[in-house]
Length: 431
Image 1 (cartoon, rainbow, N blue to C red):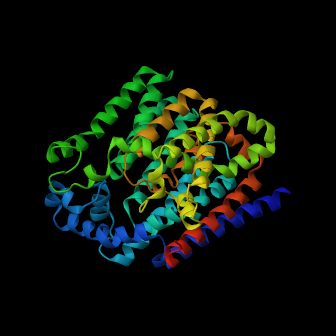
Image 2: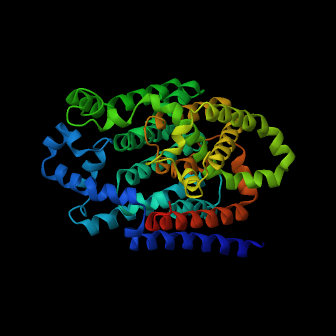
Image 3: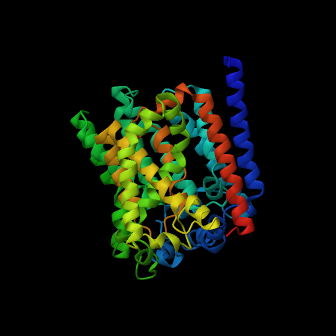
């Protein structure tokens, strides 16, 4: 394919993705039940409560029945001039979702993709149904992803050493500042500051820059420490038991198969071309030990009855587990096979750069494994961002560049079908 036709393909995919995103806004009543339900149940009302009685709402935050921290409500109550009206508010959050796509393209560009390639890769998030639902119904995840993507933009500049020494401190401040905002919106996004602090201190960067990070995060943590003092804990437990009931470290083990499955779900289109480029024999040689080890573990746990909970999900679990329910996959064979493949993907990504990738993935496992009900939208578009913003140090990005047009076609078809399938499922109760 010549350059002109190749660029025409990319531009077509970008505009198609944008059209789907705004078409979904127009038909937002038919989107995912969770995001719409949250908005109707408490999100918009909470914004108005914070706006009308700020001090009371913050002191008694548990009454708002939201497990996330209050910065999301503060920003929209006092920083969003369109938050007085439902329709204008939802339009404004949709535009935030669109801006997330634009900023993501710059973060991807920092990983040595061309402008048109970066826009095409970034536009894939506009086809993801959970990202659409959170943007069009204005829930906290939408704003959290926005600030996390800004963080990744600055982080990619630091990671690739594309920042001049005299401006490095400012870039480090932006990383600390925007990652702190993301954390105060969605506590699970704390995974990045933890990862960033550890890896930066283990790097060969100058000591004064490391001290700067400590100073920045120390200052930015003051509001968090104040809230902990105000509530008597990391959440206002006296007014709500929502956190203690549904967030516990004991859930981490049960959530491991789900997290492995989510990595398979978003990465398999790249691995198709891994096999195409290296051959199935090479792929099998590098993945069969981890794959069959996980299959053995899952089989043993299934026989022992320890995976029975996978058949009893009423909330969360993800698309592949739900598909198993629809087709009456009694033993969750499809789910466990894809989880084992996801685990083998992760194992080989870790082998690419043990120190960086193992640390990042173990932090994600520990932080995101806490909820009793693990929803797929917690990982959408997180897994995609980790790869294409370069947080995962892997040669997979070079593979994407080599087969770019084919990769982007597979992703766009796959995510479009996934989008349609989820909308159909939630509107026609395919159980």
